[in-house]
Every structure is written in C-alpha cells, then in structure tokens.
Length: 202
Image (cartoon, rainbow, N blue to C red):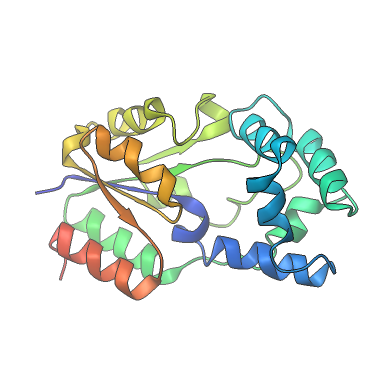
C-alpha cells in the first residue's frame, strides 16, 4: 500500500503547462514551439532555467534573460507565458480523496522564482497538501535525487511507499531510483485512472 503521493505542479495540478507555453508563443507571434525551443535546445536557455529553479537567479533576472532570447518584452513575461494555466480540478479532487484515505500528499515543483508573478497564487497548496516543496526555496531542483528524498522526508514516508507524478519524463527516473513509483502524467483521464489503481481509490 502506498502511503505518499507527490505531485508536480505545472501540468499536473494545473492544466497543460506546455500547452500554455505554446499558446503564449502564438499570441506573441513567435510560433507555438518557440519557448520550448529556447528552454530545451539553447545552452543559455537551459542554464538560465536551471539557475532560476534552484534560486541562483531572481525572477526578474530570469525574465530579462528569457525576454532577450525570445525577442519579446520582459515586463510581466512569466505571467503572460503562463496566463492560460488553470487548476486541474480532477487532480485536486483526487488529492482530497487520497488525504481522506490517509495518504500523505505533497507538491514538488521546479519554480520560476518568486517575485511579482506567483504561479501558485490561488491554489491554497498549504491547505490542500501535507507538504509543499518549491525548488528555489530549498535550493534543489528536479531531477536531482536530493529533492525527492527531501519531499519524502517531509511527508514522513519512505520513498518506497511513495508515488511520484510528473508531466516531464526525465523527472521520473531519479524518483524511481529511490524506490518511488513514477507516473508520467500525459493526459488527465489516464493519469487519474492510474493513480486510482495505485492508491486503491477506485
């Protein structure tokens, strides 16, 4: 029986993260894949993302770099880029069911920094989850194994008794090496069904 449920934020607790980035790219006249290209395929983009996630760059500094790489206005950039994100209510409902069944729950999120834009505002994460781990606050980030262990420790549950859910495939293997069961969240219906099966919530 699994006793811990650890969820990524963007694209799991929220609606499709990458879909929001693609919609932003279209709105700004950059093309749907422009932001993902900068974040994944450019050395400076990858380095800046890693630095803001583990707290080495401020949100303002990151927006300035990202704006230059994309060729857009830096003012309010992250808010514009993620404007389409909404709570994924079926996931939040499942979290409530899991907690009612005695399963400890946590959010584990790679952050885009704290500043004017707060992607977590309005989600009541502290009220909905037993633990909240945000990368820039702990100076660790996925896919480093330490942040998964830290999250399990905060829940008081061994990794081998935890299920970890993320919408990014390369974040799963480090959790699995610690003994967690990894679930790639690619769509809501299949993701919920898999979690209901693992957590015996059906």
